[in-house]
Length: 455
Length: 167
Ligand SMILES: Cc1cc2nc3c(=O)[nH]c(=O)nc-3n(C[C@H](O)[C@H](O)[C@H](O)COP(=O)(O)O)c2cc1C
Ligand code: SF4
Ligand code: FES
Image (cartoon, rainbow over all chains, first blue to last red):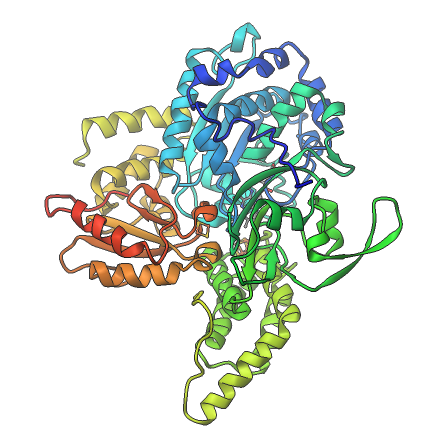
């Protein structure tokens, strides 16, 4: 049987007749979970989230309940909640659907989460390029405030919280949570060093702060609705709930698909749901979830431990869609923004495209990241432009090795991982490309570029 | 400074939303740029005064964030996404065609002042790649084949009476 979607977060997205106004949301049971949540103790709600084993959907997959548990309550300082709506990891477009098509679901999630952690104020930090998304959220907040779903003394509970939408202005690094905090303070988005600046202790205005992704906060609403112990039954141990997969690149039907964690494979997603590659093409490589995650080459085999504890082997298409399975294959599902590349793709060009991104987006605070990402861009671009040298192959890998683990924030890893995975896995392609260039240069010519230009 | 009543009032409503004034920085800069098309020296100093910070604190924000600019641009701001998902579906060809059809180089403003074309990084619409933003609007599935028509439509919509883009 072909794989089925299980839509929880996206239940009403693209449903005919479903609109973004409050009345429609309420007709579909909107804000009922909030109403019930407000009658419970905040600690109980935090416990539900812990019981649910929900992992954050912003890319790192950190358990949400545990994160909330780190909040410094002793300081007596106000607590803040920031919803990360920066959606800036290339390949990712899942939060956009929620913001543009079901904004009240997000707001309900934000208010429930604010109440659970007893936040004094909540912010939704939305990327600057989502002009319309900003207006949609502002309007939805006004509606919710008028109906007393946020603001003062929410539904007579005695709890008050306001939600403020804040716009970014075109930086990837604002998606990094401490960069986001600096940005929200009206500064350059320079990520902060941890320790001591763990947001749950020293966050916004040096107060305890929780930063959660848009989808995570929507998941929280469903955790509270069904109870943590029910929620944890969805999916597989270690990765509960559903994942929204946004596929792009070389497939017949790019789009988003919500699938119960671990209940389908890469094959189901790429071939059954997304229609596979174009006629006559084959798939060469897949990046599982946002461009920073390590690339997978078709034909690779992974020695894994199967759910029953026995040893097994998976090819790329066999990987089940849950975080533990991708981890076993040396990569991560990240944001779920999967990019598929077919056999026409030049893998050096693909990497050069990403290196240009990181060189543009580094905030510049740390030398390895600032200099390294620019250097990576220059070397890979030189190879794309016909000036490749065989030693460039190891050079790219070496530069990347010296960035990862030596920086203030995970942008360092984000810039390094694509190189660290692409170079060893596609070494044959690099060598072939460079040898052809060397030969051409001997004749005073420039080797012809193959495939679609990606830089 | 020459700011409309509407924008000034909007800014005065923005500031008290935040526990600390300075947090309103990005929102104020957006509001001014969306009225004036860019951030002048005067605007930067006005913002500094409004937020009770030194002008350098505003300058460093303006120079850090790619969406802010200190000079006016063309009437239409054409932003072509060049990141991987869009590139895999022909974004670089789209950009070449747009430059050719609109008579405007990449990173430049056309001689008639009508267009500014730029590359931007992923705008979170990768499932409908390639995408192009014009001012504040997202245009999806602008494939290389569709680009000439897209450019023609843009040309029809753009008139000399339009002010420089505010987005
Ligand atoms: C360079 C960089 C960019 C990031 N961009 C985003 C983003 O756009 N959206 C997001 O939710 N998280 C992003 N993150 C992850 C955040 O730092 C943070 O882990 C996340 O918002 C936490 O939310 P979660 O626990 O709900 O996943 C980024 C991290 C890094 C290092
Ligand atoms: S790792 Fe890169 S992006 Fe992160 S703080 Fe350092 S220089 Fe900035
Ligand atoms: S790569 Fe163009 S929108 Fe994401």
